[in-house]
Length: 113
Length: 110
Image (cartoon, rainbow over all chains, first blue to last red; front, top):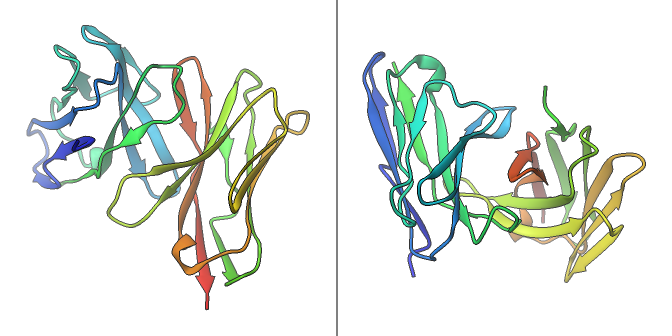
């Protein structure tokens, strides 16, 4: 049981490039979410999904796109990278939206130059 | 505007003593509160939680207290151990969304 996995661990992008951060879980969790962590800001919710085919915006959704075609996968797409998107990104999952214990992946450190 | 605030960025405590971490929130609709612990280069891990209908929850060395009228919660770690050195995040759940505080870095001195 691998839990929540994220790839890549590190990524450097140039301004304007696009990329997809991958997230997968093998716990059959319905609820998945993406956060970004910035110094002094804690973790902020970008997008979340309560099940396959259903996604919704969190606190800071601009510049990011998500889709949920399967229960296991929840990729995060950066459409046109900007330096303000330099951050550490965490994916998390839980059994349901009302399950308060979320399991986090190890994170992806993204730098946009 | 942050709805969950941890006003102490850092805390240093001697091994064996009590660590007290504080957290304030502004949204009265939050119905569940959690503490997460994070080591460098790892994702946060769940530590302890409390429902809004309770005022205390205990799990081994960790106790969380909730004061709803003051919109304040605290985490007590007794006794503090070197392995407790980490960043601690307070979080609150409402409407399927978790809101996090900025974190408190705890350093346990030998």
